[in-house]
Image (tube, rainbow, N blue to C red; front, side, top):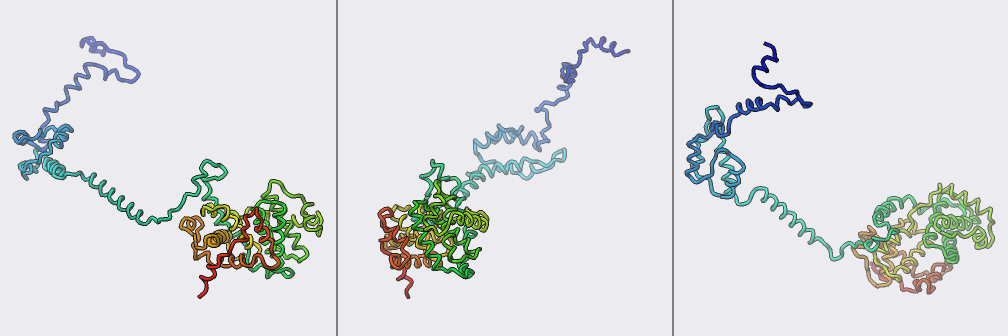
Length: 425
């Protein structure tokens, strides 16, 4: 008989298959056959769970929830009642092999229930509480270590000032610390010069400080000028009649780098009493930029002074006295042995001692400067000696400048003599 005859005899109508290939799954006849092959949950052999009907009835008689089937509802009801499992359920005879050779698991489950019920606090709660206790203990230890002088957030007031670059300021000064050694010169470079010496250098810089004030230039221009002079003299031999030319050319380059309004070449010719002409300055400018490889971006003491004064929460009086002291150091050749950051920190420390008559170096300032009092003491004592003799001798450029009202008469302040007395045996 053909396939069409079989369909006609059965009285069924053949439906075309759908795009999902599910025509047979959608046939009621097929679904009925599939359901008939399934077994109801109530007909499942109790031996699969390792329990007999007698065990189930025994559990009911003891007032316990039904053990079969094990569902989430049973576990919730069991934990809510919080009743200890009876000892009868721990009978070792339950731990037997059923007819299918499967080990009875009821005793294991009941033991876990006993542990959960008799333990008033779950294990994960205990672990969390222990962890929180440990955190509290660590916080208490940290609080004990906190000093009365916490580290100040000196940039909090500049959060809305885009020029303060608060997000990057720490990285900027970390970079300054890493590169400040590359901007330093050897404290013995003058030994390679055959026609000039330290005294001539001091005379030149003292004169340039007066020129800087007369031209009303920015403070950073003066510090960069001195840096350019020292770096050039370290790598080039100069005769004494060209030393002043080196000085004015260094200031010209510093002005081009720092200033908005740069003095004219003719201004430098006039200020040098026409000892040089325009052509001499341009020639020396070429020599200097090539010798220095056009590297003008160097951390001078000025950049550290600004940051450290901010950390010290300075006022105008402390700021002016600090700059007076550090400009005295620019003239002194022996101060080249100290890095720029240490010079800046020592100048502020010395100025504090001079103003207040005692040491004012707090933990906050120490943290921001990375220098302790002991590290600053040698440099600070030298600064006190320069302060003492500032108004004497021939080199009075810095003293005259800071004796003016514009600079708060900072040069008239008393030196921190007690710092020198501390060094006496």
